[in-house]
Image (cartoon, rainbow, N blue to C red):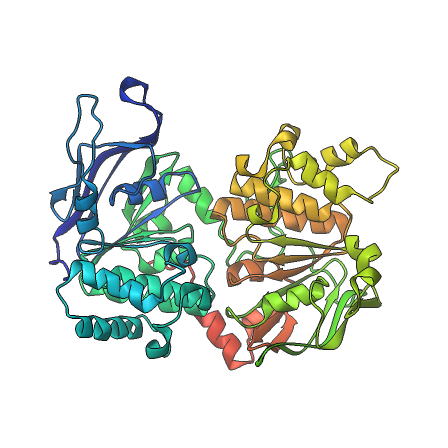
Length: 561
């Protein structure tokens, strides 16, 4: 049920959304005066940092702004019908009834969010979940619904749909879950699709497939409201771009104009923070990761010298293999990480990257092969043999929040990491130094993880990894969940800490632009094997293996027109 070309599917005028309070004492607006329209067959992208109001704006259109939210607007129409409901004397819309919202969602508007794992019912097979959307919003028979589910899964590129319909979300990879969620959102052929970070944390080839699918939906006449912090993805799919900051629109217009000739300083800063094509060692952020450590003017124009990969190896992985049941997750992998350098590790979901990282960390023993740390045996072996040397290896993960005890303060988290470190200096002195190293104010020492922003939590995670003065830090998707400007600060921070402390990084990421910017050497994995490795610059410039060529070709880049 696609829209008619030129038909206005969304009209938003003076939208304000806030949380808490009533009447004149209501809470402050987190979305303040936002206006835009979206026509059938066009894609409008909303971009901006975390907290800018992107998701709240999108979710308010389908009545999902959140508990305690209030909404007011001059106009808020979906498919020509107002979704404001009755407006009280205080100017706040009371919204539609629950039944009215349920009729709208799925039938008129499809919603795709980033984390399909928590959006799909883990207790039901995906076939039943998609079928429910058809049962609620169409008059298809049970047999017709089953056929439609299979057709939908096939259209979103789900391999072997007949078998997958019986699987639950926890049995699927991230890319397959996202495909199932998109199939569910498209089931009733809505005229409008809202996609909130639908490709974040997906590998480049899967991301390209999802984008191609959404482009096809748009080209068929569906209106697409697309939210993302990835400006390269936005440049591929969006006809128009709306830039938000602190709840307000600071710039809007055709994608080629906003991304190619930005007028607002905030938009320019977002574009400068994109790492793709920026040489190794060139600062991405205006403050080089720390407000207290401004970047000299020369730092933004000259890259640091490339570290010699002939330096003594600090981590040696030799002929390592690991099997889970019938699946060979890591297959005869050999890698060397010289001191003070960064080895980038890339590959599709399921290629074995994280399993290899766990072996490198000594959290899993290989079935075959060995790992040496600073020339001495590290794995396999009993943990008691590693315990005294464990401070030499640190780790930073994508989701810092889940790696913290939420009851502990920043001071307690770091003090725990410092346990066993140099006793010659007071703990408070070491804590202050760690916080300063990662650009955090000492006032945050008493805060708990839930009281910190995503960028602050990742800085604490890095400080924790640095606390015992490690020789190696394994970074597993450390910035994929961060907005582009915060990502730039964290990458600059990691680069500076490497220069100052000589630590080596095993850097795992699906974002090839980030990996290219950060890596001295590169290894490409698929199906548990390393297919290609070498100098990062050489692999990116002249990939030899067909898989590497396909992986690099799928990576999004900012393109205009």
